[in-house]
Structure formats: structure tokens, C-alpha cells
Length: 127
Image 1 (spheres, rainbow, N blue to C red):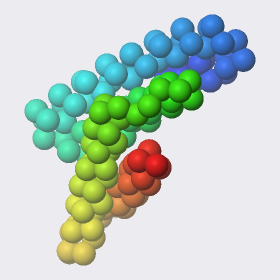
Image 2 (tube, rainbow, N blue to C red):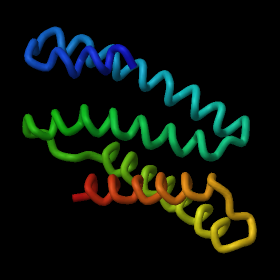
Image 3 (cartoon, one colour):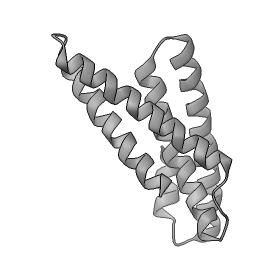
Image 4 (spheres, rainbow, N blue to C red):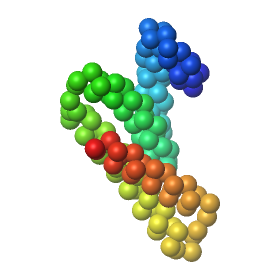
């Protein structure tokens, strides 16, 4: 988190910003991989989906800079955006099912909000 704040605050110093940004990217990749493992093996579906959301944001930011330089979207972009869409649909569906049943709790709101957020982000990325 500190490297993310540092990268944002040093945006005017391009060389330092890029170096800190690379550290931030690999830090987020590490968090994503560990959350992925914990989500799959620990049956923590919410953590798994939030990991997809947080890493997608980081990954899409890096890819956006490459698109700005003229690179075209590739298979990895479609796969990552499709994963975000699937995770968003999953969270939204779980939230709707729980919300319509008698099991309504504050967790339902989290599922609905994060699911909707993921779908909005993925629609923007598909454009």
C-alpha cells in the first residue's frame, strides 16, 4: 500500500514513479496469488473474487499505459476482463439469491455492491 501511495504522489517524477510502480505491481501480484490460493483451498469465495477485483485494477492500469503507447489489446486482456465479469456475476448472483431468501444479512449488501462494481468495471474495460 505504501508503494502505491508513493507512486501516486511522485507522478511528476517519471523515473521514480515507474520504479515504485513496478514494485507496487509485483506486490499486488503477490497478494493476488496468495489470495487466490487461500480462496481456492480455503473455500473463501469472497476473498477470491475481491482478489480478482484488486489485481484487475492494477493490471488494467499497467495495460492502459501500454495501450496509450499504441499497443493493441491481446488475449490476456480478454481473459482478465472475462475473469472480472465472471467474478462480478458470481457475487451479484450470490447476493441476489441470499437477498431474496430469508438469509438476508449485511454480507448480502457487500456481495451486491462488489458484484455490481465488478460488472461496471468489466463493461468499461471491454470498450
